[in-house]
Every structure is written in C-alpha cells, then in structure tokens.
Amino acid sequence: METAVEAALDKKAIDLIVLDLTGICSFTDRFLICSGGSKPQTQAIADNIAVTLREAGIRPAHIEGEAEGSWILMDYVDFVVHIFTPETREFYDLERLWRQGKRTVISEGAGR
Image (cartoon, rainbow, N blue to C red; front, side):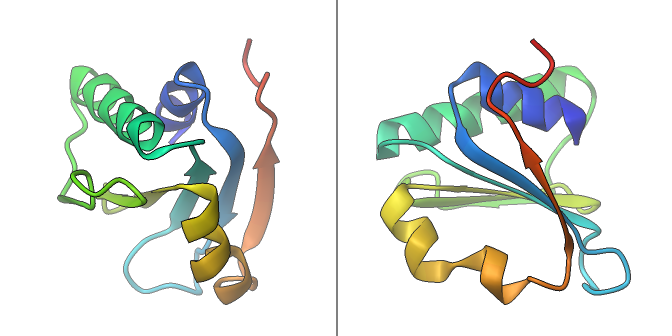
C-alpha cells in the first residue's frame, strides 16, 4: 500500500486518504482514495501506480475505468485504489459510505 501511495504522490495526486476496513469489508482490507485535477491526471496517477507496483511484483486482480478516467478502480485484493476527479469523488462520497473505517489522511509531502 505504501508503494501505491508514493506512486500516487509522484503524479501529484491530491486529498489522499487510506481507509482501514479490516473486519468491516469482506472483499478488501484497505482503500486508498485520491483525486487528480483532470481525467488525464487520474489516468497518469493510475498508470504510475500500475507500473510501480508491477515493478515490485504486485499485479492487480482487476482495473476498471481507465479509459473514461473520472473514477479509476484498481483492485489489488488486499487493498483497492480509487482515483477520482473531484466532482466524481464528491458525488460517490466513499469516505461517507465507509465512514466506519479508520481514516488516515496522507499529506501531499509525505515521505519526501
């Protein structure tokens, strides 16, 4: 998960939040939720996460939304990455939907 966070930050992802869903969610342990300012930026964030994790030997079980770019979901089984445009993130409001999870806000300068 930390590698995915760093890869997202490398492409200037904003508003990063990790939700620990252990014991709450049946299909994953954590969400990484972040935003990009535009569809091309969300796609660049997703590409960088995929390449960086692949180089670390971690492959996704499933990716969807890359072509459209307003909500990209990357399922790595133990964690799921959600990359949104700001409008789409506000509309779906996963943070509210999964508010039982323990929230960790990642500052844009983390690890730098």
